[in-house]
Image 1 (tube, rainbow, N blue to C red):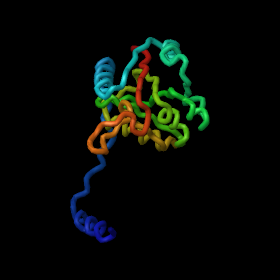
Image 2: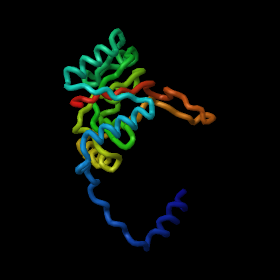
Image 3: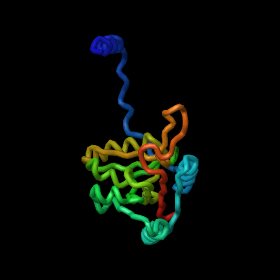
Image 4: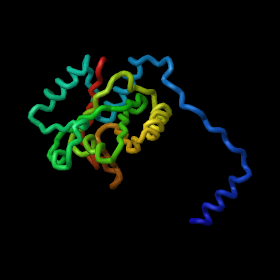
Length: 187
């Protein structure tokens, strides 16, 4: 392996250095409604769901009503392993929503905090317009900031957990929630 790496270093040693690309482009003049439409379309294509509510109170009411009678854990409450094992629904707040792919991005200061969105059967994220970005370049710029702030654990979720690794047969859920709902405030 060392010889391989050394041969690569020699091959690129005399070549021109590429300049750092600089900051990622921002959403600019892309209307929030357009980003939300793109996000919703992308997420529903992979069997996720977007629910639009007018405010925070309506978001909490939706979660309470939609999952009534089921065990719910809130990430903000820092549930312990026992609570996570019993939970059917995990609720958290999104950091970013990637319109291009319908992906939810969330960063955490420690690995244990991320478990509320990954262990329960269903995952719910609450978000608003300020968290919409067009795609990965904008998300990764924000992700770099979060990591500098000490939030080194990141989760990117695009729909229910799935894999087709074995004989190209799609399996849902594979290693995470079987359902993803994004409750969008201020729609």
